[in-house]
Amino acid sequence: MKAPLYQLKAEFFKTLGHPARIRVLELLSERDHAVSEMLPEVGIEPAHLSQQLAVLRRAGLVVSRKEGSSVIYSLTSPRVAELLQVARAILTGVLSGQAELLDDLRAAGEPAESARKYR
Image (tube, one colour):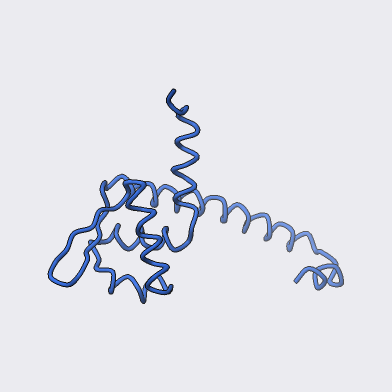
């Protein structure tokens, strides 16, 4: 019995649910990278980066190849980069809506005492 599509989507988004994996995908959206190039950009220990890359490989989002002593990673599809761009556009809209709400609250003249309490 095959899994319903919504369950597969949930598993896919769970794979994306780690900041290091998102950062790796962002880097690979720009160009292929060697592991050594990604380390300072992702900011995690080599063993942890290796684990995160393995998760992305198992999910079919990245592939690796050997070039000399380096392992080079690339995206399996440009659609991954498109997904990251769509996520950025959605977040931009959400955050700008929140910024507008914050501006409205400030313009309403919130009492100084209660405003300090929440900062």
